[in-house]
Amino acid sequence: MTDILQILRDYGLLLLVGQYPNGPLGGLAITFAMAVLGILLAFPLGVLLALGRISPFALFSWPSTVIVYVARGVPLIMLIFWMYYFLPVATGRPVSGFSTMVATLVVYQASYIAEIVRAGIEGLPKGQMEAGRSLGLSYLQTMRKVILPQALYNMVPTLLSQFISTIKETSLGYVIGVNELTFAANQINTTLLTKPFQVFAILAAVYFALCFSLTLITHQLERTVTARRASAPTRGVPQVQPAVVIASE
Amino acid sequence: MGRLDFSTILRGDHLASLGSSVLTMLELTALTWLLAMVVGIVLALVRMSPSTLMQRAVAVYVEYHQNVPMLVQIFLWYFGISTFLPQEWQQWLNHHGSEFFFAFISVGLAMGAYVSEALRSGIRSIPSSQHEAARALGLTFLQSYRLVVLPQALRIALPALISHTVLLFKNTSLAMTIGVAELTYITREIENESFRTVEIYMVATVIYLAISLTIMALGSRIERRTSLAGR
Image 1 (tube, each protein chain N blue to C red):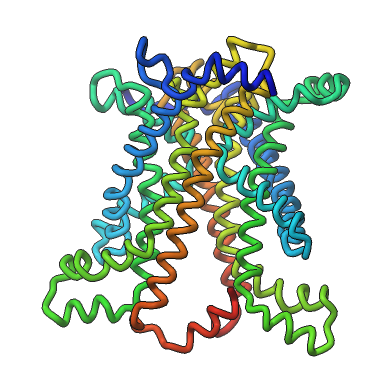
Image 2: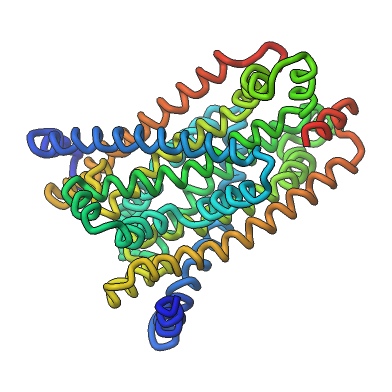
């Protein structure tokens, strides 16, 4: 226990912000930055991929289906190595580990978000689209003004849990030397050499504190969304349902 | 970037190590999956026990494993917890591939948490009146679970179990970070030796994709086979 406190005293700042302000920002700050950027950019791409997936045109549905299946069927670490090799070739200049990692997370998470959004859209009654169309809205207008607002609202908790996944996935930045939290812990471990358990236990505890707090918020949001749904007037769902739902809780 | 040339990597030593890396990966996947299933089932059962203390303990186990990155869990086991094992065990493990063992332990225990959650939500989605009705008909507690509740709960848990299986398979690639000679590790090695980066990544990607898609296809086949009429 005293070891852990000692390590925190000596290296706590390195874990939080890396060498900053005497060097580049790193540690937890970079982990968080990558996760936030990753999920913010992945979200719009994910919605586009989802719209592509359900599109009646093969021109849109095929490429999005391929992207989604490839990104979900291949380990993240493999995608990171692809990006690591491919981005400098494609852009013609060196790309930082940070950008490589964010780009990979965007593609990877967008594919997962796409499937969540698709399920959200397909979970709505068909009558929603039909009603929108018969009121004179175009397909895209109905999507934007009727379908997506409902589907996305239901998905808020799921999206937050994708953010938690993203935070955990940033730890893989370690393999291409991004100066994030796991990388910082490995540096400390190499410096100390004799306290591997203490160092990695601290590392696990930091991730746990961050991700578990977000998990608690997710559960709270889930309850809010469910409550809102239950109190809202029926949306084409027969009223018999609630009895069963209550019994299963 | 010149023409694609697979001839150098799909021949001789490279092909041999590629083949054995795929075997290592499949072996790691199969063993880890078994461990995850056993852990998941035990945890799900314990969570149904009346003891609040036991339920709390399982909840802590699950939250820890779901909220800490898999890579960090692997490091904690491989670099950290391994140092607490008795000296003879450590030596024995070092002679028998401790990397493989700790990858198996860490990924298996972590995925067990996910499996138990999938099973639990399956069980929770079956109304308790089902269990009560079964008991009222004269079935014992265990019979009621085995014959009435679990057959329905497992069907509900199936999609989650399939996606966790794919996740587990993909997570075995993290074992490369501690030096297990599985597909990703060997891919990097062949890349360094042959400089055929695109080709070897393509080969590895196709192998990963083929296995992931096979798991998904098998999963949906089982889903269809076991689906009940009217549900």
